[in-house]
Image (cartoon, rainbow, N blue to C red; front, side, top):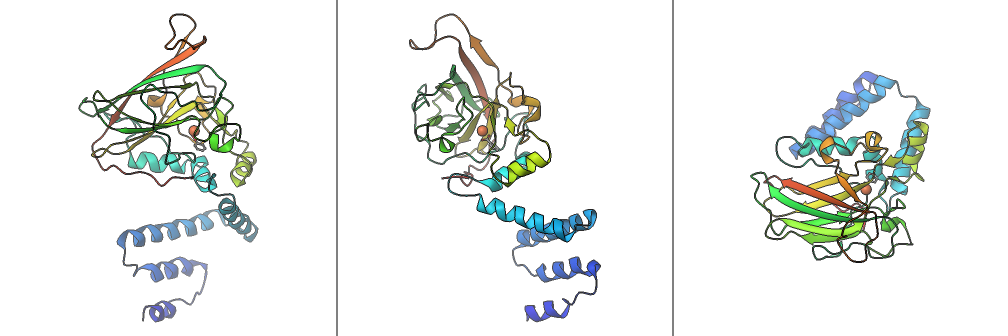
Length: 306
Ligand code: BEZ
Ligand code: FE
């Protein structure tokens, strides 16, 4: 029955008729949210083609671009997320759905394509350096509180970062599996800490279609140096965020638009004094971080890679 009704209204007379005819075929979608989102998607895609008067050659380039995004995606790389990141779409969706660092909760920042689900559990204060990794040492002390200032105990905190050569371990055969990744649990005072190396800025992967896009737009591919955090505790909205290194030259021009003012950390450099551990060389860095979680639903994102 449905098909017949759709067919009856489906003969196209002109370009102007395409959009309403397509929308009509979708209006019986039982799931109301799917109905709304899919209709808006079609309306905006059609409006986009009309606005730029898309040529057939450009249409072919666009389809090829989408296909190449899929082809470039595999277990250890997610080009789809990279594309969403590079056009600011991930940050937009992130900030539409989470605090932007307003009154109380810590600002969210995009998850990015490199979070892995099963980071090694690490005792608080332990090191996430799992194979020799160059760079000045970094000691992070952090606390997680709720919006009323009370400590959030027993929160699970995933930390991940690139090495000072600018690669995540899954991109680099020279690093041990899970190097610079760890999973911590906050103590009764909401505290956790770890030892690492100071992160460096890095270019996002540019071998695929996103790299072609950046080159065509004369954009640099760099992210300012940062640490990633994903903080999970039942009863609280999962906090996905990053802390940026304050002296990075690309702080103002992050290729994926992830930097908000509140997320720039104060990385303190130490050239003398008693180091936090006997084997530490100067200079070393320390970072104090405080996270605030809002009450809400705890849920984990879909891991972008395995
Ligand atoms: C990241 O911070 O890991 C990242 C985010 C977006 C694109 C590439 C990398
Ligand atoms: Fe990153």
